[in-house]
Length: 207
Ligand code: AMP
Image 1: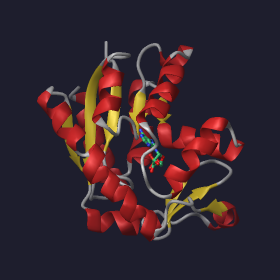
Image 2 (image 1 turned 60 degrees about the vertical axis):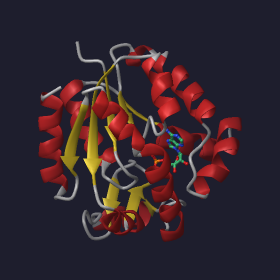
Image 3 (image 1 turned 135 degrees about the vertical axis):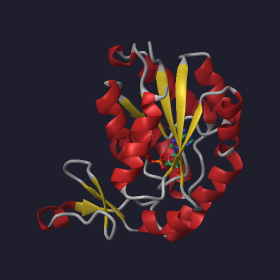
Image 4 (image 1 turned 90 degrees about the horizontal axis):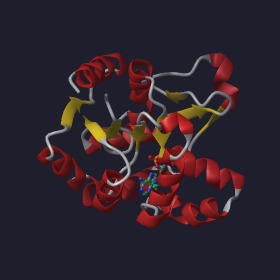
């Protein structure tokens, strides 16, 4: 049986958007460390207080914090047949820890060049009621949700540049790590949401 799946790629590659298709196809729950951390920050928990400064400056939250969060999440009943990781692992130590907890069947890497990332992230908005993600030009929100739109605090140009630096230095080497294990599928993330979705679906079928 298919174990966990990892969605891999730079910030703004469309991991959160494309996760929906994989959840539909596999029935595995989406586990987004970014969403979990944002929820901890908004609830003002101890974890949230610790993570906040890193997140707002575009740095990665320390590995041991993230690994603890994932261990707890994987102990929940809905995770027993594997999950879809979105935004995790982001460092080699995180991937090593993960290998000791659950079987990773496939890693789908969505590739988008840096020059496209800034535009994508700076125009990104979220419906605060439903969590649906929009983009001011690429996926314009319907007029009735305009008043509910919020922008992530770290979705500004300065912070995006730091997040991209962190991606290139700490996360990108993981792609090669998984490629060497023979479980990496690469998807071109530059097309429309539907086109990328097709490629992601093909990659899932090939696992
Ligand atoms: P994301 O929503 O995936 O772009 O994550 C937003 C921010 O949360 C990142 O810029 C990091 O500060 C933090 N974060 C999320 N996932 C991780 C992770 N796996 N390792 C370290 N930091 C993370």
